[in-house]
Image (cartoon, rainbow over all chains, first blue to last red; front, side):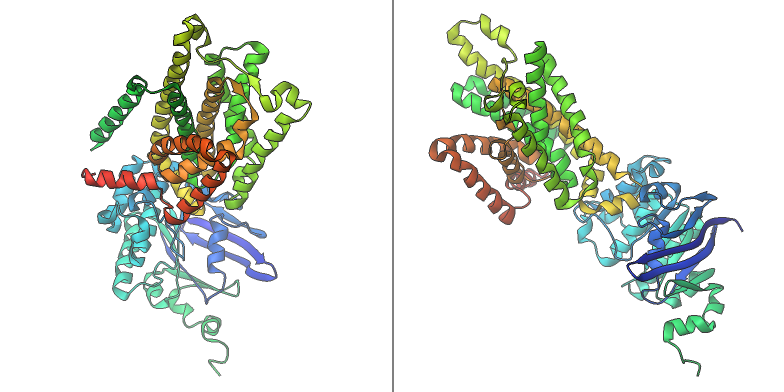
Length: 243
Length: 324
């Protein structure tokens, strides 16, 4: 399997708190990798480190054989790494279509077709076309999650970090988002790193999982093995479950 | 719909061209010329600050660079205004980039406060020795009217009126050109990115767009327009004085126009400039220096009660009534 991203010994502290501590793993082209762990285990920090929002204290991020550690977020995005935000982000006073126009105006977004066509296409695929001229601030929570995915599509990335895309959604909405993610993965060939609390859904999608706890990697492997792994269970439920 | 808007703009422009023939007095013509200049100031402020929400309180510094550039070129080298004015725009742009590039990395209130220091510093510099020797101190540098040689040939009776009429027309041409440019910038996909920066800059970066590049380009456009307007302004006033940098004579009217018109709308400031400048001129006779206090209060009231801008709200309603 071809490696698309490699994280080597990545560490980041905030004050005295080690948010991410010596984490290494690889992501392979075309897979769906689950990144899981209890609250505060460093998942979002890890995404911020890879996408350039914050700089690591030590360690390396290698994307398609190139060291991208510490590059600016827009440079990294143009290399083909997109992300969504746990607290959904949007431009509240801009129409939905304009929200998607921003990534399609990026150098990478412009590569294939005009920005406007690209933005419209992303709205069609996410089912937001009817809301095209509605200010994004008036969209529902579910629609904002779809908007995040529309923005991802407009950038045509190769690797996508999805930070809790199912957060706050109903089961039927989750099913629809999962369908869309499957399309991005299988239909568009995007490699997905899915950060998720809801293990039930993640287990259905993920080819492999990486488990974090207190900023350290405690497991990497098949999802069905993760749920049997002693340290993983302890991380989620606390010590003493087996005794 | 598009053509309807363009047609309305043309009718409005034609009306503005015919204004001096409507039997207006020279005083009124002068006020209207100043209103045109201030509309350009407000537009140029709006095209950068209204979209990105980086409030450039140092806008009068940029205007001042334009004003003093053409004045110094005239005084030192005898450069004619029609050459000096475009050069003033370029100088304002160049100096603006140099001075603001470091502060463009600041955000929010920090940017606004940092930018406010520039006009205050230049005001001081222009009034203390030895710089006041070059910059003319409080009185400023005397400069000719752009059409001085043409006016000199007219009989004295006609020259006075021609002075104000030509000032009005020149400022109107500058206003129309700037309005077209500002509208093009603010309502294009380029403008979408600028507005995105104003609402969530981190998200624009994460979307693969180099925000510094966009901010800088918008700032350059804003500075060029402001520099040219500042230069034309001093030629109409026939003196480049530090008043053009001052908070009460320049910055407060600009902010009032933008807030009354609607921040980031470009269209709003156009109408708001006439109302504001005419009221400002009128209030001079009524309360003198106190007018800047009255305007500051008005500014606060507008921000509290009509943050989206009075003129833009009226414009949007009118559009709604006309079926878009």
